[in-house]
Amino acid sequence: MNTVEFQNVGAQYGDKAVLSGIELEIPANSIYALIGPSGCGKTTLLRSVNRLNDLIRGFILTGSIMVDGKSVYSLKDKESVRILRRGIGMIFQKPNPLPTSIMKNMTIPYLEHVRSSAKEARELALERLKLVGLYNEIKDRLDAPAIRLSGGQQQRLCIARSLMLPSNLLLMDEPCSALDPISTYKIEEILFELKKERTIIMVTHNIEQARRVSDYTAFFYNGVLVESGATHNMFAHPQHDYTQKYVSGRMIESVLQEVHIS
Amino acid sequence: MMKKTKFKFHPVECLMRLGALAGIVAILFIFAFVFIKAWPVISHNGLGLLINRGFDKQISEAFYAPVSDPMLTFGMAGLIAGTLVTTLIALIFSGIISIGSAITICEFAPRPLASALIAVVRLMASIPSVVFGLIGAMLVVPFVDQFITLDIEKVVSEFYLTGRNLLSASIVLTFMIAPTVITLSVDALYSVPDIYRETGYAFGMTRFRVISRILLPSARPGIVAGFILGAGRGIGEAIAVSMVCGGLGMIPDLKYGFISLLTPVLPLSAAIINKSEAMSVPAVESALFACGALLLVLGTVFSLVARFLVKRFSSGGLVNET
Image (cartoon, rainbow over all chains, first blue to last red; front, side):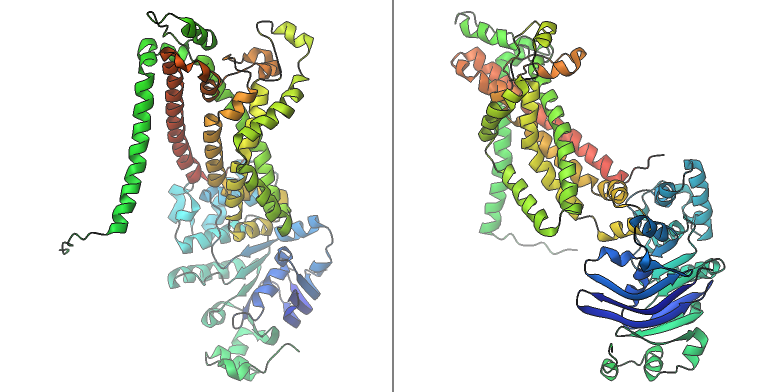
């Protein structure tokens, strides 16, 4: 399982509507790319899945988001929201290692929620670091501050860290936007590996990346879902004029002004 | 090769350099002056100054000693202990108060309340210390006085107990240190990037755990800096402490537990104020300058140790309880 379903989702910050009428189904064990110009609501949608937008004052969501058939926004008590968040890994745009050692970064979320010994946590951490291909690069400085790693290494550390809890759903908010092409390539390799057992929703501004790694793509503009479907289909035969312009990199702002939240 | 720049006279730059230089020279002169004045007592006692006790008695002996045979033997162990213990206890009290307040201001209070609280805290920092002393003498001393019972006096029979003691001095000092620690802790907590909070919440941590496991450790260098400034104030504070400390250079005897907090003390800075009426006698004057010299040394050592600690702490980062 690990499916996510957006049913008529709308979102607003105070009076400002940022999303409306989103209908989208994310199948299990796939990479779903959300693309579109800045400010079109992709990130808001992504951060709604683990209810991280709750932290922002004035955020209101309508419609419903179902993770594994359970409605995320009907969770009433805080504890169930926390349990939900533990099951969902989140990778941010900017690598976000905590200001501590590499190893402690890995073990903090695990020891926080799983009753286990430090030794077990350490073993799992090593396993996860190997999974993201970081272990060989950093094996002799596991206790060095994580902020001394390069940007790409930091981001892989964050991916490894998000795998410390049994999360089958990963949310990635432009995970490679701050990285060089080689680091980006390494992370894309990891994504293929992770896809085998997990579902990944990824916001990206890099159209080529969406084409390379994703199974499905959804194109957003001004808070509405313009088009979605299998990536190869969408890139080869975009149904919508705007999609065609965006994916070919020929989008001109003025042309698209008429698409608005209805 | 770099071209050699021609010397040009910049009046403003010269003025600023002069100002900076004047500051350094002034500090050197203060050190020199205090040590020269204190030299008779320091040279006469040597290390005994730090080890021996009995300052109160020695001052009155020195005051009544004949001019032809001045009395120069002093022991300041009690004063040093007074300074260190009052400051330490005040730091512990204000640490609890300050970190709690800082968390309330930054994480729990709604915006308008938070800015009102910060304004109050800043105001507290600017209250003259004699006012703290006055409030201490009128409110804290009677409050502490009620803890003193006949039983306690029976246990500690060597001196007469009043509400003016270590506990009162520490409480008054707590409220003088707290504004500094709160202000710096608030700044440190506010400057923790939001992404650390989000990271914690995305792990499914509770608000309390996010604060205790992520925010406080991230803000630790700033909080430690607050404690250092607070400790500096605690060591140097004279007038308010002298009004509530009891004025006897006793060393609190820890074997009495809580009762030891009721010992009258006399920190170095308060001693200078307390005994300044006797300064017309050169030996007393020199002894009080020796107090000042010890304070300068203590302050210098403290700031060096603190700098070392800050370096250690800021590279360490989060602690893991395993």
